[in-house]
Length: 168
Image (cartoon, rainbow, N blue to C red; front, top):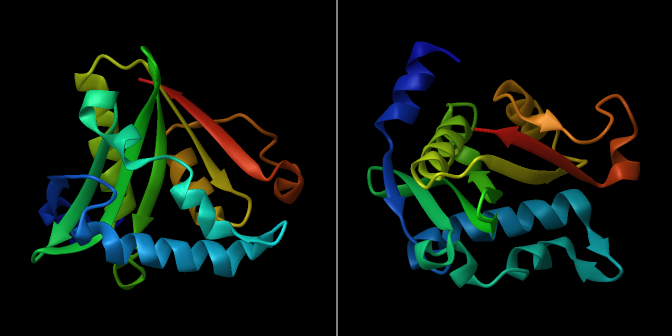
């Protein structure tokens, strides 16, 4: 990452909000389109249905979760969330960077913010999954010290959901 991209990511403003916030809608819509384009239909159901699998309250602080957006000039450019698994573990979900702002360190910043919030809450472990057709996400999580819970050299398509874990 160059100094310029690090500066861009560092200049973004963090907004703690909810997945159903209207400000998050453009990012969630783009993520939905991307899921459907990369993965198509699963048993006749669009892959984007995954985004509605968990109710918004799972990402609220009073349920042990958090949902953040990164804003540049008031516009959402990236976001991510976690939800509580148990007293010691959260699961990161919905990490996303708007397509016009990729390769500028924003996903790395989202992950740093989520990890910092988890640490403030005394969380010891973070788990997450990504899809087999998201090699850029796999590369990010590996670079951030996440341990793959699958054979990194194996057939990712056969695994489908690629699980990772990190101890804070």
